[in-house]
Amino acid sequence: MLGLIQRVSSASVSIDNAVVGNIDQGLLLLLGIEKTDLETAADKLLQKILNYRVFSDPEGKMNLSLQDIGGELLVVSQFTLAADTNKGLRPSFSAAASPQQAEELYDYFVIQAATALKTQIKSGRFGADMQVMLRNDGPVTFILRS
Image 1: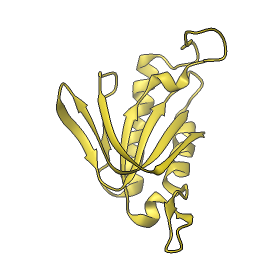
Image 2: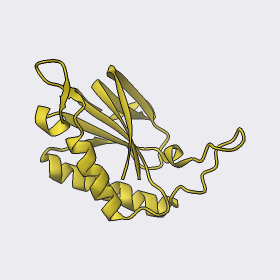
Image 3: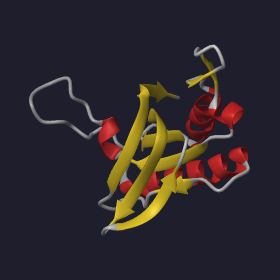
C-alpha cells in the first residue's frame, strides 16, 4: 500500500463540479492499493500517516504529527500510484489491486482513519473521476509505503 501525503493549508476534492470533501490544515493522502495488500498493510500505513512528523514545532522543525496538531485528513484513492514506470513510456498497472479488492481496502482505511482520529475525515469517492485542489504548505510531500 502506498500513500503520497502532502502537508496542506487547505485541500478539496470535487466530483462533477460538486465538492465532496474539503479540509483546512492537515494532510491530503493519495492512496494507492496493490494486489498483495491486506488490512494489516492499511493499519500499518495509517499509523505511519497519523504519526509522521511533518508539521513544524515552535522552533520551525518538523517535529509534530497530524495527531499532535489536531489536523484534518483528506483521503483520495489513486490507483496510478501502483504503476510500474521502470520500462518504456507507458505505465503498467499489473501490480494494482483489482477494483473490488481496492475498494474494500480503501473503505476499510477510511473507517479506520475516522476511528483513530476521532473526527470525521473527508474522502473522495472510490473509482470516480475527481478533481483535487490543494494548497501545499511548504511544499512538503512524502511517499510512504506499508
